[in-house]
Image 1 (cartoon, each protein chain N blue to C red):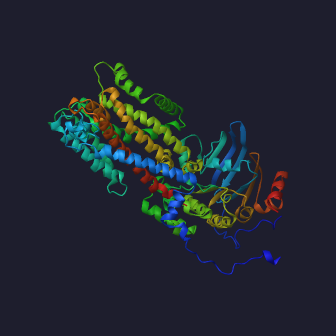
Image 2 (image 1 turned 135 degrees about the vertical axis):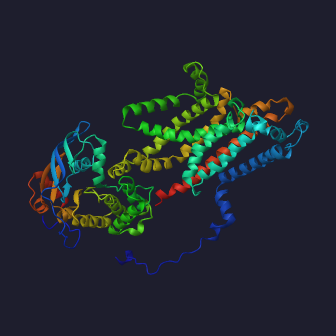
Image 3 (image 1 turned 180 degrees about the horizontal axis):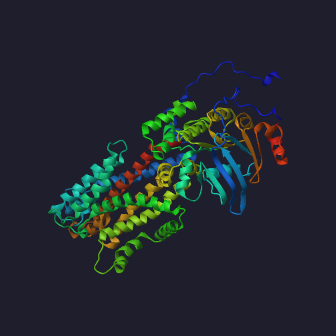
Length: 374
Length: 266
């Protein structure tokens, strides 16, 4: 009997891990050369990098024509990217056909976006309420006045002349700022107990989701005027904005609804039992938790919205990509790598914007993780 | 059977304030029926709860006891009959529902604390937004109740960082912050580890000692014996038997009650 009885007399001291488990060699062995197949994959990956990196370097930097170069340099055989072309057309890529003498107006709008928008994204920046009012009320009004003019002695610039990054940013920022609240309202409506509201929301969401964005933009720009009373026109940019926003909000609604379904019935009941009203229950209890669950989905929608803005060329808007496409045909920069360089530039701008959004969302995910910490 | 249900606290209950009013009615349920679809879950419930009563509702699972107390703050709607809480009859009128919920606290089996808010925020949310209490005052009250349930040091933590027993005590404190006239307990200790049951029951006993009107769905027969002034036994959506705890446990009348008690008390 006594041979199964055991009483520990002293507690073992913690010891350092064996040398073979730490350090560079151990890391390499564990991560790159753990088995034969791992080793083969590592070698293939290294060979691939050895092939692609010098090639990319040669095209993008080594054989490339730097900004300030001439078109003749871009026309030599086996030339790399023609950055000189981008540099000379950069203003068109940013402003489109916006009159050159008025560039200061979009510039102020860009500056306002940075000075008002960025602090709003930064949680510890002070004066959140003032900041939000500035961004959601003052900034849009000021931007419309500045960009379109026609008052306060500013020259009128019709939206047909707006273009490039300016249009891409306008549609993205407006779409992102409006589609989330609209999507939340649609998601709440779809969950509503009131049959009329519920039916309307379901019809809207399912209709919009079942139709491609291109079709919606077409309808907005070609069909809509047919239904409107004669003589009334809705601005092209506004139509594109409405189309993109409604489209994104339908998708957003389903993402938000998904998040709401992850919230247990107990949360709704506890909130109700405390006497909180419908909007308080949703605003304080359900939505904060639901939205947190679906940050990756929401941000995915933001990113695809930003990229979808390039579809507004359908209705004749010259967004960044369309501006690049236009100049890619420009005869004065005709060279072997002209359009490739243009597309690389456009892709790089989109990548920077989307990647920033993506990183920012990771930051929020980590920041909001406190609630479920055990 | 009188000596088989364990005591919760090894002390005398202070009955000084535990007076049942003979005139003031807290809850009155008249001929209430409820169906889930075709399933007749509550059948002709008649129940009158006086102010200051401590009622324990027992019964097998599926007997409708949780549904019954959930009808009192209208987490469930009844389809027939009347439910009158603090003189307000519950109808589909949302204003009345809110009016009743403000005065009726509820504690759930699974605590249902708000995981994204700190303990203190859990306690102050409803007083601030439903009662319009200034934030500083709401926090003061909240800390007072946290002292009372003996976990003031947890105020800044999130629910997920607390043990089950602590979470349930926070949930009780959260209800108390609304200064309710009636407290409903829906199996408050069923989801707890055995060693945490007692700390929650002690809080409930101290609440009873202050004269709170309480309706508790629970399997804690020791609590029923020590605290309740009435035990209600339900089965198949009906009230089968009700009596004072002493008589209920020592001399059950109905066959179903006898069977139930023989199974839970050994």
